[in-house]
Length: 426
Image (cartoon, rainbow, N blue to C red):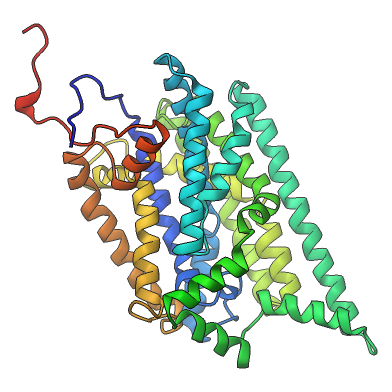
């Protein structure tokens, strides 16, 4: 491997790495449900698994503190990092448009390979498509970025609110005496996507993911072939809004750790003080209605959207405030964030190998509470490998591949040894 010339390494903004590290670890806490269970269980805890107190407590904790927030943090950091790359390209005399769109092109390709051949829950392809759109907002002021971000999040809310209203009327129409067959069929299909699974549909789902790689891959390509386009239309609005929030947070100094502790403390208290009680109320509402599909759509998918940004900003402020003094754990979290691309893809490879039939075949075998043991074990793996690797190498393996492809040439990988660095002035 080539060695990086002394002085050629750009200074990293450690705060970005730390928050990204928390985000990539936290994402697994929700994705684990989609790795290990039928996807319906991601939104509805009654869709699959035991009806135990431990499982319900696990769902409540995930819904209030994890669901959407870690993805939002990850999106926030993606927007900030995207802007950082653009600015550094400009400063170094490169063509920022070329650098940006090459990065997004290869990220899209990585995402499609991940989606079709590893796991259906890919988010990279969506990030690449939205990142191409976000380019046009790069020169906006902080205030305008926040304003546009709020507008896009509001559009996302209106889309999901409309879907939940439609589900409510569809349920009413399907329950009427003499309801038309196609209306009943549509309602049953919606129930199948968000409601409890049983009988033949459940058996087919379990048989598929406990089966061979070829069958899973064929099903993934068949069912999720247009997933990036659908995700862009359905989820792209909020994702773009979070990217813009991240760009604004970078420009304002919030994500670079430049604010005074009092400001971070204020935003942490406000964000979490608003978000946590709101999510607890929403959890009570959906549980009170026994997780009926229209309520799941209205509460879990729509009503959470206005409160999610507050929680995300609150989390970011709290993380920055809590890690200011550093320490061995903070160093390892930062390393996990520097290798977030590898940790994200590596998690998918390990989790699908653990749960799918071509690996350990544990799909559908563990309850929600038990899955936390898997999550914690994977966190340990992320923290254990990332720092030793990055002490020796400049990038994580997939980061190196992405960077090399985007720049059309292999990038220097190995860090110089102390003996290889020539002191200035000699």
